[in-house]
Length: 324
Length: 144
View 1 (cartoon, each protein chain N blue to C red):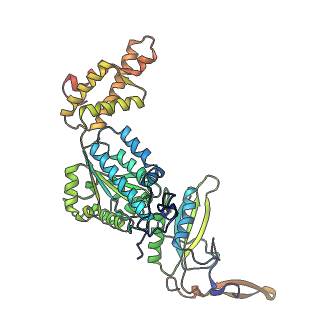
View 2: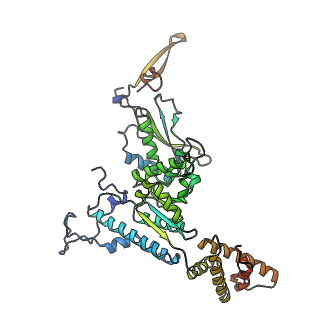
């Protein structure tokens, strides 16, 4: 009985809104099956629409991820309404696993996820603590437990994001301290479900190996979300948004050239989706600055903002078909 | 003492009130965190009022956002020292302040024997008074 309706504190303060009326507009006791709760009003009051819209607008592509997040948001919303009607018992398990190639937006989505969970009242503070193996695993005996606990305490009330989580488990070294860290995490994921949400992230195949060797971890994670790679068009759209944020723009020809650049770069090794695009743009800005400086004439506002084809064509991807 | 049934040690905040529940402790810690104070957990089995430096249970906790982490630490301290005095201290590190701003007891022994008044004959038939905790007659860690 102890675990009954033991949600985050906000729930007790949410009153059932005006829509809880019978047909004759007389308020009824919530145990009645005919009690109505306005899902729409609930949706509006939670402000998650704003976050979801932002997710749609700012993140290009990632359709399966967005669908999944909408599903999770809907589930939590319905769960919240059910709670008002005294229907559900336990906090749903919200631990997640984001798998996908580098640069597919896992960290960004995790940050949004923290906001969504916060708006819905499933985490109290809504901050994101991003860590890797270094932050969790110690260097000598007895160092790991305090270090992991420290991180967990910092993440309480928010989301703990473990990037490249499979590094925690190193099967080739049976004395590796990573296992200890995993055990503490498992315990916290089970006992402090109300206090924090753990999101693991990493490459798909290696995450699968990780879960196979840690079945306890797999069973405690309810949502596995796959991040697909971006297409050329999506990457171009991402590039446009990135440049817009920095008050730059691609000229019409530069767009075509950059499209070509992305297509060529994708075939080369170590392609990291969004991150590669960002690096390419940074280098293009460098070359643009150099070009403007060399030209040495007076510049219009437009000149300083525009990235021209030659800024991109100078890349080694075009010259010798290598990464730069 | 007639005015303090049960000989409860009264030091720090809320010590004249009934023991705080975990929810109440959380609310207090939340206030401390909201102000950006570092919270730490300390314990002792010497209840003398002038015993200001208690043992630290782990490091002070900086950069926390939520009281749940500190409550976790309090509970593990309670588990380790079920019948010690445990207090929670909030430290304000603002330059020029740099001192504890909150301190309250979150765990105490079931039975607190209290204090006796000791008299010492000094020169010229003067009497010096001091308080003496009955608990400290026993060696450390066997007191409660």
